[in-house]
Length: 55
Image 1 (tube, helix red, strand yellow):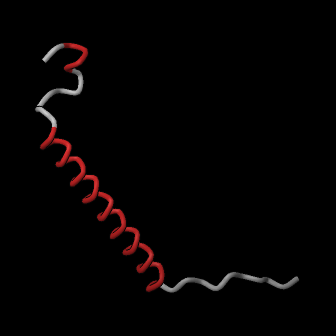
Image 2 (tube, helix red, strand yellow):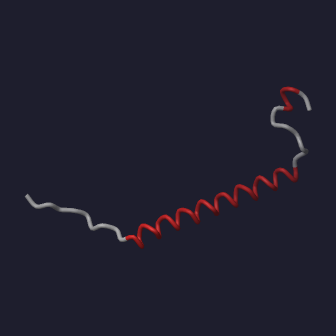
Image 3 (cartoon, one colour):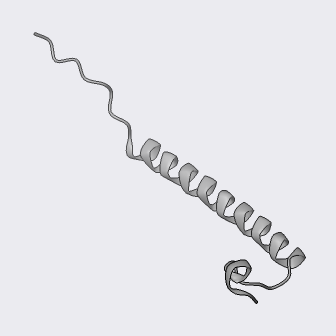
């Protein structure tokens, strides 16, 4: 029986995938931060639980 294996990915290919994933995660983190800052500037400074327990 023949041993058919998939070709192995080189270290450069693996590093490229990790770098691309890290850059995408950084972009998402910055995007979430900018959305959060915009909401914080528009909203009054209140605790998330203030609607239950007062200001």
